[in-house]
Amino acid sequence: MKLNLFQRLVRPSTRAFFAENTGSSGHSLFSRMHGYIYARWPYLYIGMATGRHPVARFFRSLSKGRKKSPAASSGRQKSRAGEIFARGYHGKALPLQEAKKIIRVDRSVDLGDLEQIIPYDRARQIILNNPGHIAVLDCPCRVTSVSPCKPLDVCLIIGDPFAAFILEHHPRRSRRINVDEACSILEAEHGRGHVQHAFFKEAMLGRFYAICNCCSCCCGAMQAHRNGVPMLASSGFTSRADPEECLRCGECAGLCGFGAISMTEKGPLVSRDRCMGCGVCVDKCLGGCLTLVRDPDKPPPLDIGALLQRAAGQH
Image (cartoon, rainbow, N blue to C red; front, side, top):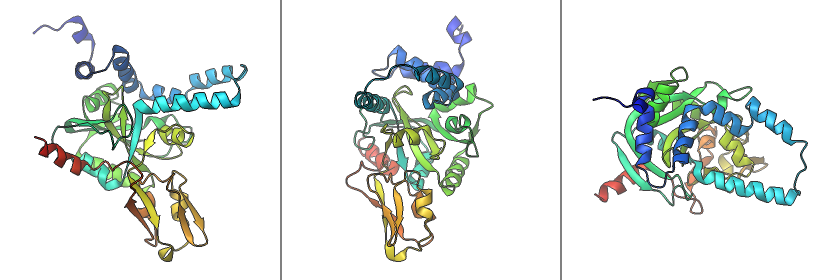
Protein backbone atom coordinates (compact mmCIF):
# COMPACT_ATOMS: atom_id res chain seq x y z
CA MET A 1 0.00 0.00 0.00
CA LYS A 2 1.49 3.34 -1.08
CA LEU A 3 1.71 6.18 1.41
CA ASN A 4 0.74 9.70 0.38
CA LEU A 5 3.05 12.66 0.97
CA PHE A 6 1.44 13.52 4.33
CA GLN A 7 1.89 9.95 5.57
CA ARG A 8 5.53 9.85 4.47
CA LEU A 9 6.42 13.14 6.15
CA VAL A 10 4.41 12.87 9.37
CA ARG A 11 5.29 10.42 12.15
CA PRO A 12 2.92 7.52 12.90
CA SER A 13 1.99 8.81 16.34
CA THR A 14 1.07 12.20 14.87
CA ARG A 15 -1.12 10.54 12.27
CA ALA A 16 -2.76 8.48 15.01
CA PHE A 17 -3.40 11.58 17.10
CA PHE A 18 -5.01 13.48 14.24
CA ALA A 19 -6.97 10.46 13.05
CA GLU A 20 -8.50 9.87 16.48
CA ASN A 21 -9.08 13.56 17.10
CA THR A 22 -10.82 13.94 13.74
CA GLY A 23 -13.41 11.42 14.85
CA SER A 24 -14.17 13.36 18.04
CA SER A 25 -17.20 15.60 17.91
CA GLY A 26 -16.75 19.33 18.30
CA HIS A 27 -12.99 19.44 17.61
CA SER A 28 -12.02 22.08 15.11
CA LEU A 29 -8.80 22.17 13.13
CA PHE A 30 -7.61 24.89 15.51
CA SER A 31 -8.24 22.58 18.49
CA ARG A 32 -6.40 19.72 16.81
CA MET A 33 -3.42 21.95 16.04
CA HIS A 34 -3.51 23.30 19.60
CA GLY A 35 -3.24 19.76 20.94
CA TYR A 36 -0.38 18.97 18.59
CA ILE A 37 1.58 22.07 19.63
CA TYR A 38 0.96 21.36 23.32
CA ALA A 39 2.21 17.77 23.11
CA ARG A 40 4.97 18.45 20.57
CA TRP A 41 6.55 21.40 22.39
CA PRO A 42 5.39 21.07 26.03
CA TYR A 43 8.40 22.86 27.51
CA LEU A 44 7.89 25.92 25.32
CA TYR A 45 4.11 25.80 25.90
CA ILE A 46 4.36 25.59 29.70
CA GLY A 47 7.27 28.03 29.81
CA MET A 48 5.21 30.62 27.94
CA ALA A 49 2.06 29.93 29.98
CA THR A 50 3.89 30.36 33.29
CA GLY A 51 5.93 33.32 32.10
CA ARG A 52 9.21 31.51 32.74
CA HIS A 53 10.37 31.30 29.13
CA PRO A 54 12.75 34.11 28.02
CA VAL A 55 10.34 35.14 25.26
CA ALA A 56 7.50 35.47 27.78
CA ARG A 57 9.69 37.55 30.07
CA PHE A 58 10.63 39.79 27.14
CA PHE A 59 7.00 40.51 26.22
CA ARG A 60 6.15 41.06 29.87
CA SER A 61 8.89 43.67 30.12
CA LEU A 62 7.51 45.45 27.05
CA SER A 63 4.03 45.62 28.55
CA LYS A 64 5.21 47.25 31.78
CA GLY A 65 5.40 50.68 30.18
CA ARG A 66 1.92 50.58 28.70
CA LYS A 67 -1.00 52.44 30.25
CA LYS A 68 -3.02 50.05 32.36
CA SER A 69 -6.76 49.87 32.78
CA PRO A 70 -8.38 50.58 36.16
CA ALA A 71 -7.61 47.90 38.73
CA ALA A 72 -11.21 46.76 39.23
CA SER A 73 -11.83 46.33 35.51
CA SER A 74 -8.47 44.60 35.04
CA GLY A 75 -9.23 42.21 37.91
CA ARG A 76 -12.60 41.25 36.42
CA GLN A 77 -11.03 40.66 33.02
CA LYS A 78 -8.32 38.43 34.49
CA SER A 79 -10.87 36.48 36.50
CA ARG A 80 -13.05 35.92 33.44
CA ALA A 81 -10.04 34.88 31.34
CA GLY A 82 -8.94 32.46 34.06
CA GLU A 83 -12.37 30.82 34.19
CA ILE A 84 -12.44 30.36 30.41
CA PHE A 85 -8.92 28.93 30.40
CA ALA A 86 -9.71 26.48 33.21
CA ARG A 87 -12.76 25.07 31.42
CA GLY A 88 -10.58 23.42 28.82
CA TYR A 89 -7.46 22.64 30.86
CA HIS A 90 -7.77 21.39 34.43
CA GLY A 91 -6.82 18.74 36.94
CA LYS A 92 -8.66 16.59 39.46
CA ALA A 93 -6.89 15.95 42.76
CA LEU A 94 -6.47 12.26 43.59
CA PRO A 95 -5.65 10.45 46.81
CA LEU A 96 -2.71 8.14 46.17
CA GLN A 97 -4.75 4.92 46.11
CA GLU A 98 -7.15 6.28 43.49
CA ALA A 99 -4.24 7.36 41.28
CA LYS A 100 -2.80 3.84 41.50
CA LYS A 101 -6.16 2.34 40.52
CA ILE A 102 -6.18 4.36 37.29
CA ILE A 103 -2.67 3.15 36.49
CA ARG A 104 -3.80 -0.45 36.96
CA VAL A 105 -6.78 -0.37 34.56
CA ASP A 106 -6.07 -3.32 32.29
CA ARG A 107 -8.53 -2.88 29.43
CA SER A 108 -9.61 -0.17 27.05
CA VAL A 109 -12.62 1.71 28.38
CA ASP A 110 -14.85 4.66 27.51
CA LEU A 111 -16.34 6.20 30.65
CA GLY A 112 -18.01 9.04 28.80
CA ASP A 113 -18.91 12.44 30.17
CA LEU A 114 -18.18 12.89 33.89
CA GLU A 115 -20.26 15.99 34.53
CA GLN A 116 -20.36 15.81 38.32
CA ILE A 117 -16.93 14.34 38.98
CA ILE A 118 -15.08 16.75 36.70
CA PRO A 119 -17.10 19.94 37.26
CA TYR A 120 -16.16 21.79 34.09
CA ASP A 121 -18.22 22.17 30.95
CA ARG A 122 -15.40 20.89 28.72
CA ALA A 123 -12.62 18.27 28.87
CA ARG A 124 -14.10 15.73 31.26
CA GLN A 125 -14.01 12.32 29.61
CA ILE A 126 -12.00 9.24 30.51
CA ILE A 127 -11.26 7.16 27.43
CA LEU A 128 -8.40 4.73 27.82
CA ASN A 129 -7.06 3.13 24.65
CA ASN A 130 -4.26 0.66 25.37
CA PRO A 131 -4.10 1.81 29.03
CA GLY A 132 -1.06 -0.36 29.76
CA HIS A 133 0.95 1.84 27.40
CA ILE A 134 2.45 4.35 29.85
CA ALA A 135 5.19 6.91 29.27
CA VAL A 136 6.96 8.95 31.92
CA LEU A 137 7.95 12.42 30.78
CA ASP A 138 10.26 14.99 32.33
CA CYS A 139 7.80 17.40 33.95
CA PRO A 140 7.54 20.60 31.86
CA CYS A 141 6.78 22.65 34.98
CA ARG A 142 9.94 21.43 36.70
CA VAL A 143 12.14 21.65 33.61
CA THR A 144 11.18 25.29 33.08
CA SER A 145 11.68 26.23 36.75
CA VAL A 146 14.86 28.03 37.83
CA SER A 147 15.44 25.68 40.78
CA PRO A 148 13.33 22.62 39.98
CA CYS A 149 12.36 19.87 42.37
CA LYS A 150 13.96 16.52 41.59
CA PRO A 151 13.49 14.06 40.06
CA LEU A 152 12.25 15.54 36.79
CA ASP A 153 10.71 12.39 35.29
CA VAL A 154 7.38 12.32 37.12
CA CYS A 155 4.63 13.06 34.55
CA LEU A 156 2.76 9.87 33.64
CA ILE A 157 1.15 9.87 30.19
CA ILE A 158 -1.54 7.18 30.03
CA GLY A 159 -2.76 5.28 26.98
CA ASP A 160 -2.68 6.02 23.27
CA PRO A 161 -2.45 8.09 21.19
CA PHE A 162 -0.84 10.23 23.91
CA ALA A 163 1.85 7.88 25.24
CA ALA A 164 2.96 6.89 21.74
CA PHE A 165 3.12 10.55 20.70
CA ILE A 166 5.29 11.53 23.68
CA LEU A 167 7.65 8.59 23.24
CA GLU A 168 8.14 9.21 19.55
CA HIS A 169 8.60 12.99 19.75
CA HIS A 170 10.53 13.23 23.03
CA PRO A 171 12.90 10.23 23.14
CA ARG A 172 15.43 12.09 25.31
CA ARG A 173 12.85 13.34 27.78
CA SER A 174 10.63 10.27 28.11
CA ARG A 175 10.68 6.51 28.38
CA ARG A 176 8.19 3.70 28.37
CA ILE A 177 7.44 2.18 31.79
CA ASN A 178 5.24 -0.61 33.08
CA VAL A 179 2.43 -0.44 35.61
CA ASP A 180 4.62 -1.32 38.60
CA GLU A 181 7.14 1.38 37.70
CA ALA A 182 4.33 3.91 37.37
CA CYS A 183 2.98 3.01 40.81
CA SER A 184 6.47 3.31 42.28
CA ILE A 185 6.75 6.84 40.88
CA LEU A 186 3.37 7.75 42.40
CA GLU A 187 4.37 6.35 45.79
CA ALA A 188 7.75 8.10 45.79
CA GLU A 189 6.25 11.45 44.80
CA HIS A 190 3.48 11.12 47.38
CA GLY A 191 6.18 10.39 49.95
CA ARG A 192 7.88 13.65 48.99
CA GLY A 193 4.67 15.51 49.78
CA HIS A 194 3.66 16.06 46.16
CA VAL A 195 0.08 15.90 44.90
CA GLN A 196 -1.37 13.57 42.28
CA HIS A 197 -3.70 15.18 39.74
CA ALA A 198 -5.52 13.59 36.82
CA PHE A 199 -5.23 16.14 34.01
CA PHE A 200 -7.80 16.83 31.29
CA LYS A 201 -7.38 19.12 28.30
CA GLU A 202 -9.87 20.08 25.62
CA ALA A 203 -7.17 20.09 22.94
CA MET A 204 -6.04 16.62 24.02
CA LEU A 205 -9.19 15.05 22.59
CA GLY A 206 -11.24 16.64 25.37
CA ARG A 207 -10.28 14.01 27.90
CA PHE A 208 -7.93 12.59 30.52
CA TYR A 209 -4.40 12.01 29.31
CA ALA A 210 -1.99 12.18 32.26
CA ILE A 211 -1.38 11.88 35.97
CA CYS A 212 0.98 14.61 37.13
CA ASN A 213 2.84 14.62 40.42
CA CYS A 214 2.67 18.27 41.40
CA CYS A 215 4.79 20.31 43.78
CA SER A 216 3.55 23.72 44.85
CA CYS A 217 6.86 25.43 44.02
CA CYS A 218 7.11 24.31 40.36
CA CYS A 219 3.60 23.34 39.26
CA GLY A 220 2.03 25.96 37.00
CA ALA A 221 -1.46 24.64 37.68
CA MET A 222 -1.11 24.89 41.46
CA GLN A 223 0.34 28.39 41.16
CA ALA A 224 -2.46 29.46 38.81
CA HIS A 225 -5.05 28.00 41.20
CA ARG A 226 -3.58 30.00 44.09
CA ASN A 227 -3.80 33.11 41.90
CA GLY A 228 -7.50 32.69 41.22
CA VAL A 229 -7.55 30.52 38.08
CA PRO A 230 -9.83 27.60 39.06
CA MET A 231 -7.74 24.91 37.34
CA LEU A 232 -8.01 22.24 40.01
CA ALA A 233 -11.02 20.31 41.29
CA SER A 234 -11.16 18.78 44.75
CA SER A 235 -10.75 15.04 45.14
CA GLY A 236 -14.14 15.05 46.85
CA PHE A 237 -12.59 14.63 50.29
CA THR A 238 -11.49 17.00 53.04
CA SER A 239 -8.90 16.44 55.72
CA ARG A 240 -10.34 16.30 59.24
CA ALA A 241 -8.29 16.72 62.42
CA ASP A 242 -8.66 15.11 65.84
CA PRO A 243 -6.82 17.56 68.16
CA GLU A 244 -6.53 15.01 70.95
CA GLU A 245 -4.19 12.88 68.82
CA CYS A 246 -2.08 15.83 67.60
CA LEU A 247 1.62 15.93 68.54
CA ARG A 248 1.83 19.67 67.68
CA CYS A 249 4.74 18.99 65.30
CA GLY A 250 3.39 21.25 62.55
CA GLU A 251 4.45 18.82 59.83
CA CYS A 252 1.05 18.90 58.13
CA ALA A 253 0.91 22.71 57.90
CA GLY A 254 4.38 22.86 56.42
CA LEU A 255 3.63 20.21 53.80
CA CYS A 256 0.24 21.34 52.54
CA GLY A 257 0.71 22.64 49.03
CA PHE A 258 -2.62 24.46 49.12
CA GLY A 259 -2.06 26.37 52.36
CA ALA A 260 -5.12 24.71 53.84
CA ILE A 261 -3.72 23.88 57.29
CA SER A 262 -2.65 26.24 60.04
CA MET A 263 -1.45 25.31 63.51
CA THR A 264 -3.25 26.57 66.60
CA GLU A 265 -2.85 25.91 70.30
CA LYS A 266 -5.49 23.21 69.97
CA GLY A 267 -3.86 21.55 66.96
CA PRO A 268 -4.25 21.79 63.17
CA LEU A 269 -7.04 23.90 61.74
CA VAL A 270 -8.12 22.78 58.24
CA SER A 271 -9.72 25.22 55.82
CA ARG A 272 -12.43 23.31 53.96
CA ASP A 273 -12.39 25.89 51.19
CA ARG A 274 -8.68 25.47 50.50
CA CYS A 275 -8.31 21.75 51.19
CA MET A 276 -8.24 19.71 47.95
CA GLY A 277 -8.36 16.33 49.68
CA CYS A 278 -5.08 15.01 48.28
CA GLY A 279 -4.24 13.07 51.47
CA VAL A 280 -0.59 14.12 51.73
CA CYS A 281 -1.09 15.50 55.23
CA VAL A 282 -2.87 12.34 56.36
CA ASP A 283 -0.01 10.06 55.41
CA LYS A 284 2.59 12.43 56.88
CA CYS A 285 0.83 12.97 60.21
CA LEU A 286 3.08 11.47 62.90
CA GLY A 287 0.30 11.30 65.48
CA GLY A 288 -2.39 9.94 63.19
CA CYS A 289 -4.74 12.81 63.99
CA LEU A 290 -5.71 13.54 60.38
CA THR A 291 -8.12 11.56 58.21
CA LEU A 292 -9.75 12.07 54.80
CA VAL A 293 -13.54 12.28 54.93
CA ARG A 294 -16.03 12.57 52.10
CA ASP A 295 -17.16 16.18 51.74
CA PRO A 296 -20.72 16.43 50.39
CA ASP A 297 -20.16 20.04 49.37
CA LYS A 298 -17.46 19.07 46.91
CA PRO A 299 -17.64 17.13 43.60
CA PRO A 300 -17.69 13.33 43.89
CA PRO A 301 -14.38 11.45 43.93
CA LEU A 302 -12.86 10.09 40.74
CA ASP A 303 -13.35 6.49 41.85
CA ILE A 304 -12.20 4.51 38.82
CA GLY A 305 -13.39 1.21 40.30
CA ALA A 306 -16.94 2.48 40.76
CA LEU A 307 -16.91 4.03 37.29
CA LEU A 308 -15.83 0.76 35.72
CA GLN A 309 -18.58 -1.13 37.55
CA ARG A 310 -21.15 1.41 36.41
CA ALA A 311 -19.95 1.15 32.81
CA ALA A 312 -20.11 -2.66 32.97
CA GLY A 313 -23.68 -2.50 34.25
CA GLN A 314 -24.73 -0.35 31.31
CA HIS A 315 -23.70 -3.01 28.77
